[in-house]
Length: 155
Image (cartoon, rainbow, N blue to C red; front, side, top):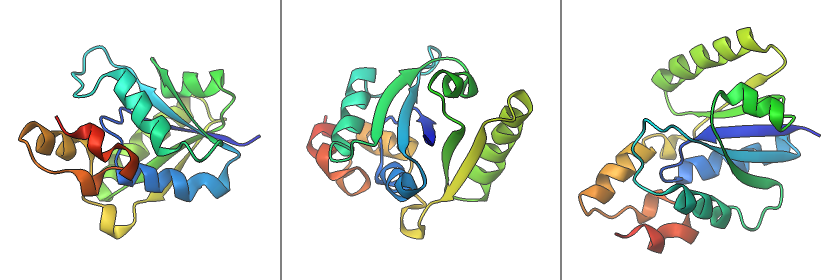
């Protein structure tokens, strides 16, 4: 079974994340959207909210699962028998950053491959940090998040 882990904080999940998962579905038997837990990071949404947002986003697709993990992503991949890490790339800056991580992961465990999918052009400016900033300042984010969670993001 080909399992991919799509790691991130997903604070919140965006239509960019959704698009990467949906485009990767034909490549894998299962995609695990894995919410990394970092005790040093301040999150806008609770872990429970982020899990629920992802579950609702992919509720019509039984090959997408959501879970949480802490520690190294490659260790989590071993735990769930995944040989693939899925990453979306918006621009050359993302590529440089993600490529360095992929090379380090490969040095630690060359049995786990990182698969990069480029973001489609119309979604390349969307990221969770900007969406959080818009929310903090009372702005409208509905066109940047999955349809099933739009009303839940208004604070």
